[in-house]
Length: 117
Length: 117
Image 1 (cartoon, rainbow over the protein chains, first blue to last red):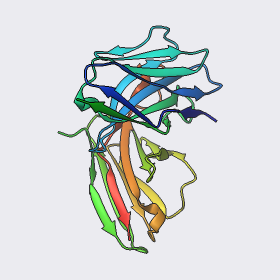
Image 2 (cartoon, each protein chain N blue to C red):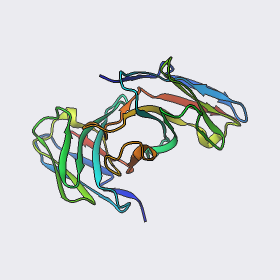
Image 3 (cartoon, rainbow over the protein chains, first blue to last red):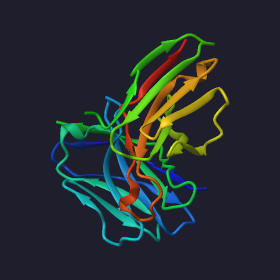
Image 4 (tube, each protein chain N blue to C red):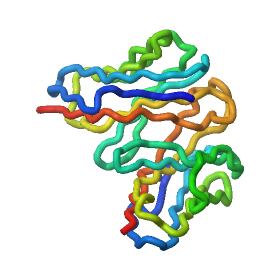
């Protein structure tokens, strides 16, 4: 069974600084996707960034980038130039490509990010 | 023009009652899901439907019955509500099983906060 682990229950960062959130996962599959979702106090689940396992290049979306280490099964999220609006709970998630469980997202426990002005 | 919309957003009800949560998506997706987020913020899939057909049923009690009248709608009916059913229920949607096509990103609704008293 696939598992996703976020070992940092809480993180904090000063506005304009950089912070990295950690995520590790366990799978025996070779084709899969990894995601970071943001959940602000409004509870909306917002996709931040996506990584395809077959791609060696790390995904980037503006101030958000990932460090994807497939052999180590590690998928960390780096937020540069942190803004107050980045404060939220961040979830790492895994999804197999294809098969009968293709729609199933497996989530980590979440990391609460606080941004200090 | 919300992509995935759920109603109601908040629901407080007594133990033993029966309630429904409705979900609609206007993204043209053919796959819809129900996820449950418990009091510890842990997110877990409950059901997924593809073209009105049940694909995933993650050992959810029989009191929970999803219904998909068409591929744009997936409703969740809960019978004989229990205190432990209190949670936030998220509806979500995506394109169906096409291997390696843009990660088939799953889009979430805003959640329905159910409180059983």
